[in-house]
Image (cartoon, rainbow, N blue to C red; front, side, top):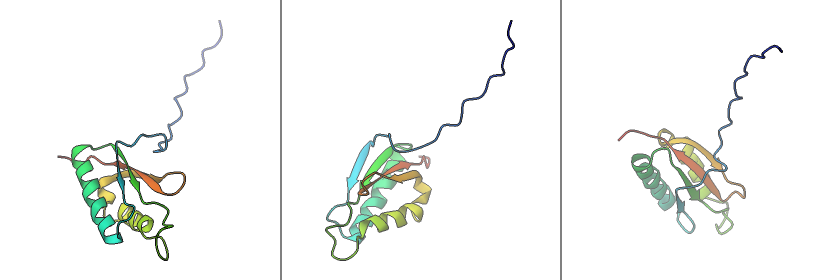
Length: 109
C-alpha cells in the first residue's frame, strides 16, 4: 500500500466583484455633481437597509459629455472611500471605466 499524503487545504478564494450580477443599478448620467451625490447617498443607504450583502451598479459614464474634466466618477469615488465607507463592503470599477459595482454591507436593521 502507498503512503497517504496529508490533505492540503483548498487555496483561499480570491474575492472579486467582477462576475457578480448587480441586483439594481443607479444611472447618474446628466446629473449635476450635487444631485448625483444626493442620489448615491439615498440609494446606498436604502440598499444597506433593505438588501444587505447585495451588489449594485452605479453608472457614472466616462465624463465625455462634461464641460471640462469629468465630475461624477471622482465624486462617487470620494463618497465610496469616505462618507459611505460604513455602508460599503467592497467596490470595483467595471471594465470600460463608466460604472462601478458596489457590495453593500449589512448595517443591521
